[in-house]
Image (cartoon, rainbow, N blue to C red; front, top):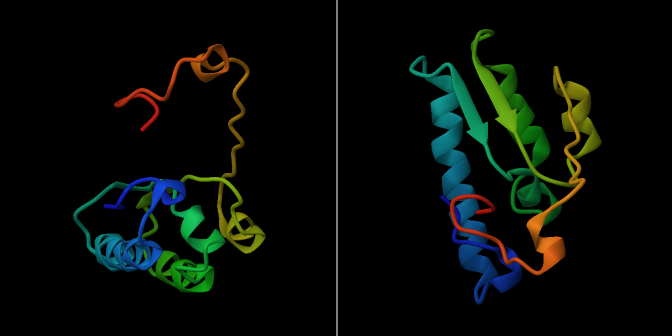
Length: 110
């Protein structure tokens, strides 16, 4: 739902608007009863850039069905969100093709 990599952006205002629209859509999905799992991939960047308020997201998460699993990914996750979470994992690359000069691959890295 995003517009791509923010570090390549030509219009951060457009990116911010897209992030807000994606959150509006996602928050409706969280409150519906149609899903068992929802993945908010890289949403933590929106907190880092100040595009979304982490408390707003937590408030929606508190209203979800207890059997709905929400997976949140991304770096620099706010402590308040980690404190709220049931499970927090850190994934660290031990070996990655990029280290050997192979650029990010569509469908694998993005």
